[in-house]
Image: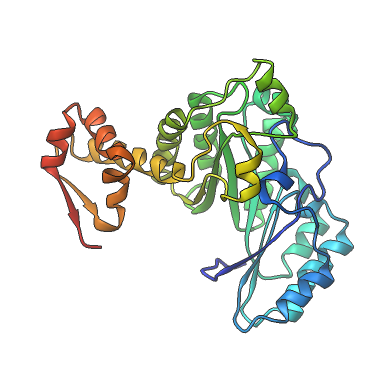
Length: 320
């Protein structure tokens, strides 16, 4: 099993293998894609490549295809992608319980298995219509870790009944299983999307989504803790698409949300490392502090207990 720094080539498979629809999920609206590519269609794309790629199968649950189909997709990459290519896919934690399936997966060059773990709170899982046994999820993850499979996690904030404290508890529980390994992390604030049960709950007043500001603060604390625990954030917020913009009913939908969350995480870290400054920030991150109406400046002022004017006197932007 190998890690990957290759350029990604994603294939989206909306609802493929899903046994039901989570209350918040409409993958077709999120991606704008209706069709699940066949192994033959994947092959046609791979044959056009002239350099190795990380071939990604996202959406639905890759390991809920029949074994024969899983093998076809993986063998397609092995046979037709340029030498050195790898595979990344997303799936439910319980989909690799079978020893035979794990043995099949391990025959191929897998860079990462991204596990959909929006939460480990049984009440929230139940409200979202997901498998609701956290202990079974822990057992499934430990099995994958014990087999040496490379893991990433996809988590969420702002779900029905979820709190910031419960999401941080989820993160700590996963960190204990992770140990010293570095796991990729995707964080998705919950949006209200057309065609979902959550949209009906929102319209009836039974679900109140996060605002952009609330998501920035919650997400910032989450990412700050994740970085301290050795997770590697590779995506914050959904990829912006025309269909996502058109079909989002409510919630923290903002193209800059990822940067706002990172700004909050940086502000927490800087204030803890040097309570009164001076603070040094790489120039490549300057927009986290000076952009978005100086959001990061204001948050650092809040965490340090000083005025924004004082922060601007004590913050320096370094090369690098």
